[in-house]
Image 1 (cartoon, one colour):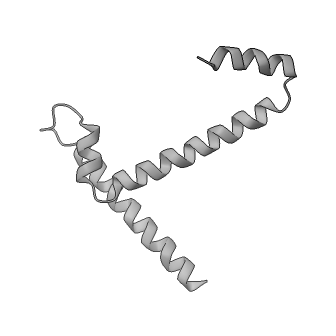
Image 2: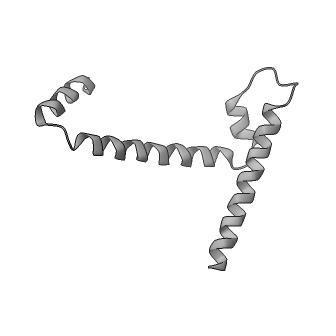
Image 3: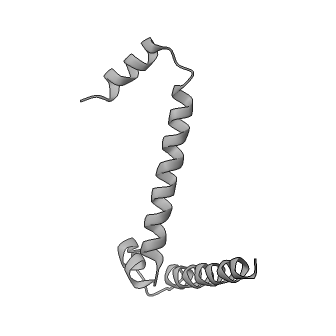
Length: 86
């Protein structure tokens, strides 16, 4: 259990560090235009975290869609298929 808690603390510290870097960038008065790619590239670990977050979010959305489709009739599913198929 101590190992898990130690890993959690490391993750929290890493997230705090990334958040601080992002906030410093966003509040820097010399920055005229927010450059998201620059932020991802210049903040250690942020791009990897963002990619993992996007993938998890994608899986959650897919799960929600699958659950929503379960209650539809075949006719309704066929109509949806027609709408989304090129």
